[in-house]
Every structure is written in structure tokens, then in C-alpha cells.
Length: 307
Image 1 (spheres, rainbow, N blue to C red):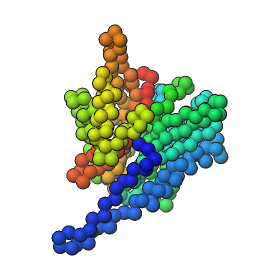
Image 2 (tube, rainbow, N blue to C red; image 1 turned 90 degrees about the vertical axis):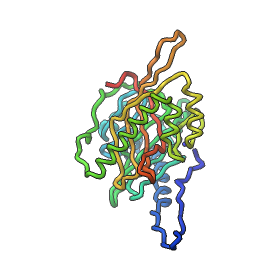
Image 3 (cartoon, one colour; image 1 turned 45 degrees about the horizontal axis):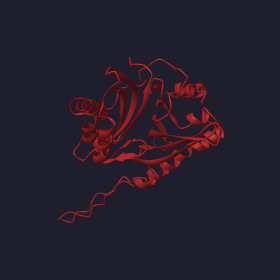
Image 4 (cartoon, helix red, strand yellow; image 1 turned 30 degrees about the vertical axis):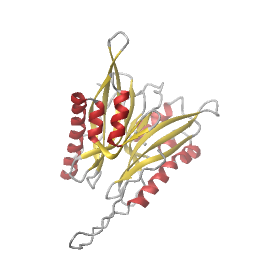
């Protein structure tokens, strides 16, 4: 959930210690992040040149997890392309404008989030949405999206696919990565437990990075205090619970994401409980003390209770 005051991933260059030992050089993240922003923006050009679904699918990794409103999580490039092809509401023009993001220490993983502008019908109308994208690349390979969530998009009218498990869920990971994946997934589960005990606002504030962000309506809440204030107003009469179903972590073990299902419970005018279901994508960054805090969180609806 962030804007185009692109919020810098503050790079602090420390001088030297009392013994004047040289500080270890920081990775050259700024040019890498700038190029990722530029690539993110270029998705609109790809769509204009190639049309849907090829223009939409051109940036997706083979193992992408795609979160579109109104349908279950879609895993894999072929299923995502089929989703785009089946959509009866694919616009002629879409632009993406990143307003925040970051990259991992090894520069092979990164994330962007921002605003999507979709040309409507009639053409003079434009619908604004938000998005979160998590990217990866191999050595000498281009960036590809491995997790994507449309935020604030209307539910698709095209029913698709039953719920399936991630294709690489049983993949054997190197021990350090497997341990980090388990850690970030456990952090997400404990995050939900805290929301159940203390309330959504307090839990999000406790788990947000200093620059962590949540999409508000229409503004962006940045940092634990703003997030707590926003969610405190928005969620007084409702509760939120969730469970992660998939997680991934960068090779440098400092950046990752979780995907899962959520349930929002509120009271109707009659006092009866009303439940709404959805799915989410949360990007996490490892802190200096080894804990994980979220950098951006968002999701969309699922029409039925998760299986």
C-alpha cells in the first residue's frame, strides 16, 4: 500500500569507527532500483505494442503467482496468460507508475508498487488502481515478475480455475534459504495472531518497517504511526485474520514475500456477522537484528471462502 515522492530506500553511508576502520562499501543499489522503476513503467509500452495477453504476460516469470480480484491465486505463466486472454474487460491502454520499491543486497530481487491507470470506455475516462510487483532475475538475465497483486481493482467477471497449490511448493531449497522462508512465513503467521489479540492497527504498526507502507483510500500511509492511525479509523468495527500459503526469499536472505488468504469480519446493520474473503501479497525486509518487517502490503477479493 505508496506515491511519487518516490520514497528512497535510505542508504546510510557510515563514516568510520573510533579506530578509523573503513566502513564496508554498500552495494550500488540506486542505479539498479532506478532501472527497475524504468522497466516497470515500460510495461505500458509493451502492452501497446503487443496487445493483451502477450503484452501483459511478457514480464512474468514462469513460476509467477498472480493475484487478480475475484478469482483464486493463479500460479504459473500459462495460467496467467490464459487469465488475461479470458478477460472481457482488458483495456486498450494501461500505464504503470511506480511510487516506491527496493532491491535486495545481491541485486537479484526487488519490488515495486504504485498506481495503475486504465483507459476506460468511453476513452476519456480513466480508472486508477494500485499494484504490488515482486521481481527476480538471474545472472545476465532480465527482471521478471514472480508475484503480482492488483490492489483496488474491480473483481473480474470471468470465473477461472479452481484453487491450486504453487507449482514449486515441494521444491527442495538450499538450507539457508529454506530457513529464511520458514522464518518469514512464521513471522506472517504471528502477525495474524497479533492482529487477533491486539487488533489490526496495533499489529500492522508493530510489524511495519520504518518505511513500510499501506495503501489507504486514496492516500498512502507510510510508517508505523500513519499505518496505525489509518487502520484504527478504517477497522474499528471489523477484524482481520489471514494465513500465508506461499513464501519466497532472495538469495541474499534480506528480502522476501508471502502470499496468503485473508478473512475480514464485520457486523451488518442487523448485528449479524458479515465475512469477506480475499488474498494478499506482503513484501518483507530483514532488519539488522534478524527480524522481518513488511515494506508493502496489499491484496484483493476472492468471491468464496478459501478451501
